Image 1 (cartoon, helix red, strand yellow):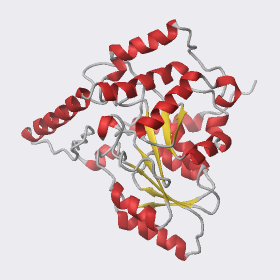
Image 2: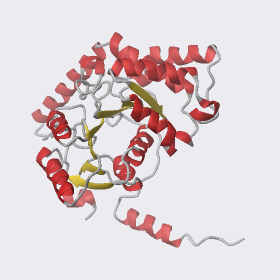
Image 3: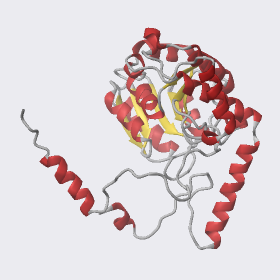
Length: 326
């Protein structure tokens, strides 16, 4: 048996170690200032009891197959129906995770001849989805509506005739700043574009009953929204909410949906219960807002500059070049 030559991988790891950038896995320890479990639902008694009751009544741990091959559980459909009503969209579709859902949407829905404009700080999954798809794509300066429109106009001037897709995060995961959604919606309307909004860090935290920063835009034909279930909702998976025709297209043409084993029905139970908790326990949202305000004020009192008023509080410590390993 031939032993593969792994020297190139060892060299890459050694280079990372030399730059103090080699990552390893370690057990949880100390105080948690990095979790995305913003509302504490992952450890809540109510979520535990909902999943425990589902196990007791015979809900399977695993789906066993893809959604199209006997993996479609009643729990998936119950979650999707409730989520569509909760987020006030026509349809909602449950995926196994936020990364795969983001990748799936942008690699499947934009067609050949279409054009995707990504924010420069859009998540890696959005970038990978755009690269893997059939549409041309470009990046626009972060949170600059004029830059988005300039990219669209330049593409049209080059002869682009397809549909334009504008892909952004409502709340950016590294800087904690918000996208100018109203301005981007207006641009989408002017250019017959579709606005795709990743609400990963806003779902459960902002908006009425935690419906997110895009709550007022959901239900529009030219808006598609991603809500992850593994952050403020305390479980795992993701919900893509939008028009029925786009969700049905994903069911029929989206390879990450068609060929993947369906998410655990128990995680669908957890996500459904979490959405109900957002309505029943608004004090969780209020408590988080109080903690965000407290943390920001405490940082300022200690002369620590914070760059966000959201639950994502980036703090620059030391030299930028040293931090980046350059």
